[in-house]
Amino acid sequence: MSGNQASAEEVTQEVFLRLIDKPRNFDPTKGTLAGYLFGIARHILQRQRETSRLDLPFGDESPEGDQERFAELDLVSELDRRQMLANLHKSILALPEPYREALVLCDLEELSYPHAAALLDCPPGTVASRLHRARNMLKWRLKEMGCVR
Image (cartoon, rainbow, N blue to C red):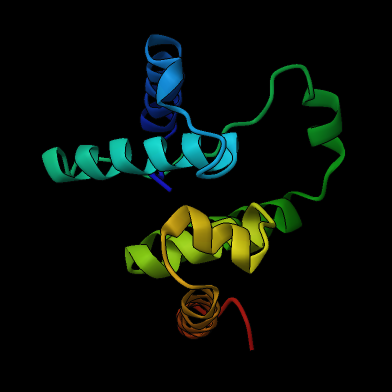
């Protein structure tokens, strides 16, 4: 959701530090542990965004030790794939936050509408509506970039 690996790592660390510091704040009658942790992460990220607009998108990082495998790939198709992934990543980050959250939770994290609704504190119908709009916005933006027909 942050688009920045360093920020994502900071948020993850802060989430678990809060859980360790105050484990009794988690109430299993209110939802799952994953939902509780996601809620903390969401609030931390929102506060970070309010204080700093300097987040940069994830960079393309290739794993070390895979040089042989990468050397055998067709360079043109690899560059095209990377460009399309970069365009997709930029397009997702450009979505308004409510739509981006629905898309990330349902399409990337593969959560059900009711589970995503519980995490976002809204009805499942709202999640479905946001997801539909997010997909349409994403499709339109990718068409504009020439990534899809």
